[in-house]
Image (cartoon, rainbow, N blue to C red; front, side, top):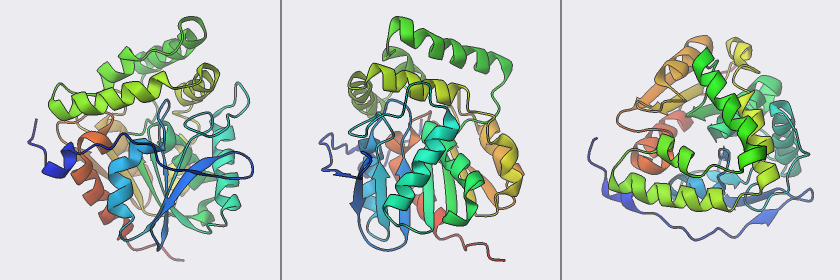
Length: 277
């Protein structure tokens, strides 16, 4: 695995002071400029974007949000599907009167971001999917559905995600410890709802990419076993203005384990000219 830049080794586990919308969505709002909204993945919280918040808020207005039932946000009803999470994001965007935004999501957040780009494209300047899933093969689909079905019986699996998401190196161990702490704080029912939506969501908006006209970044780690480089490449080929970037030697939580590379690629994405006409 490649050597890490010094800034990649810094973690701040302290929680951010949040604002809360009238309907109970918690978020932080930092910096000034063109708005960028960040949505984390299942079992995480907005602190998972810590390395990006400080770096990108120097040039943009960065809004990181707790997904429903995560962090300090109220949950959606039990059994809510991916479309319900996309609708939640639409309400959040309207509640802050954000207008058109740059939208980046990680994992489950990537599915929400893709759904938003498909559902209300005029509100999205650019979209970025970090470690996003797309049309899992039969084996992967069976495995993720089995994990979703096990949650009501066995509870939240903490060890499995940490094992899948991280390599065996110092920075991954530190990021894995943070990830473990966030998973242990999760509400069981909210996690089950989000994970089920995630498990069933890989094909919901898969056919819509050919119609998404904004610049679209698909970024993942070369060693991510679930959000694979092949998935990123497939989405990039479908989107008219899509492109893939693969970070070598990293897995699922690439924004924590390779923050310098991720921040550089997000800045590149934010500098991509908007598509007009």
